[in-house]
Amino acid sequence: MNDIQPIIEEKQYSTLNLGPTHPATHGIFQNILTLDGEYIVNAVPTIGYIHRAFEKLAERRPFNQITTLTDRMNYCSSPINNMGWHMTVEKLVGAEIPKRAQYMRVIIMELSRIADHIVCDTVIAVDTGAMSGFLHLFQCREWIYDIFERICGARLTTNIGRIGGLERDFSPEVWDRIHNFIKEFPPKLAEFQRLMDRNRIFMDRTINVGGISAENALEYGFTGPNLRAAGVDYDVRVAQPYSSYEDFEFDIPVGTNGDTFDRYMVRIEEMWQSLRIIEQAVKNIPDGSFHADLPEFYLPEKQDVYSKMEALIYHFKVVMGETDIPKGEVYHCVEGGNGELGFYLISDGGRQPFRLHFRRPCFIYYQAYPEMIKGAMLSDAILTMSSMNVIAGELDA
Image 1 (cartoon, rainbow, N blue to C red):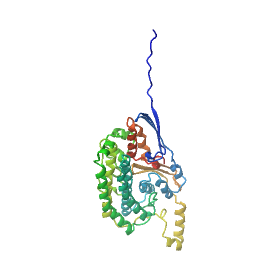
Image 2: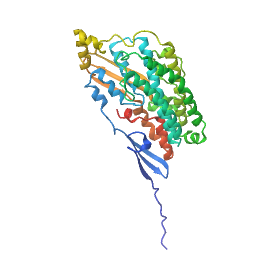
Image 3: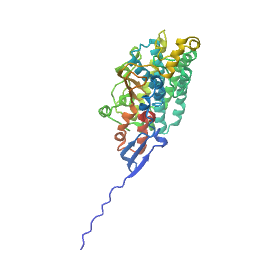
Image 4: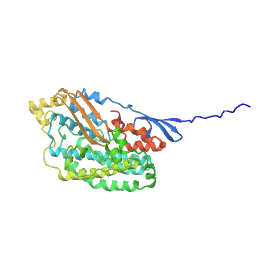
């Protein structure tokens, strides 16, 4: 009698190509998932689909023209990118920025942070099936963009401010819109929280989903809301104050589990804290100039250009980027919408940077995404990505 050999079936896995153009990825990047049914066994991220060589382009541009490159990184809060770059150059040239200009920058940057967090938290709600909250709160983002438009003429890619401060002082209409925002935004945000925070479906979909420990988050190099959600209270505005942030009172919200719900709640609380900072800045804004005395970076008044030779020469030099910068090596960082946004600048004394490196928080923390979704369901992977707020423009700069 022949021995009957048992048939051993190998486990079958399926491969799913999530992206690069799938609407649920909220950006142009790809994840190749290995699935056991609906559970994720492995994930391989692919980035670079919209890589635009910003750092190499910066080596061929005058310092004041690099601002438009920073716009296209985290385009949900581009003024923070703009001003982070301006402060880096100011650090290199040793410019002293008037207090009024610093407070005006704080107002703009905190409005940008609120706009960024509105996008992230409302998209988390959409990915759990709650569309109405998204539509309701997005109106507040439009109010912020209206303020930006009155300040600089642009809404999304703002090119806002200049090396040395702001291009112009806030007009009475800008101040009116800021005061209206301070008054009208809190009820809207509170209503959104009533819709979402204790919603049973929302809680079930987000609590204990896509979590990461504080230790692992630090090892990956997390910063910003994603790190604070894991329980680490690191905030560049407090750790390394810039633009007079030491003058303001605000709290650093932290989570405990580092999961999707904590990331959502940290951003909610940060919006309240940003509003608190804006109120203080508006109330206590000093008198003075809205920009430093830097004729190498500021266009002279137009009437002077038409009537004075020196003003015409400066106008030409600024527009053509004919300003030599001191030799040096500096690093400056700001608290961007997604964390520590840093600029590492090396100058050889020429008209363009010798080398410029952007520290993009998205590029750093996205490396942890495969670990965060391993063992989770496919639907949880979408929510985890949304709560990390991966912005493709910043990821692939």
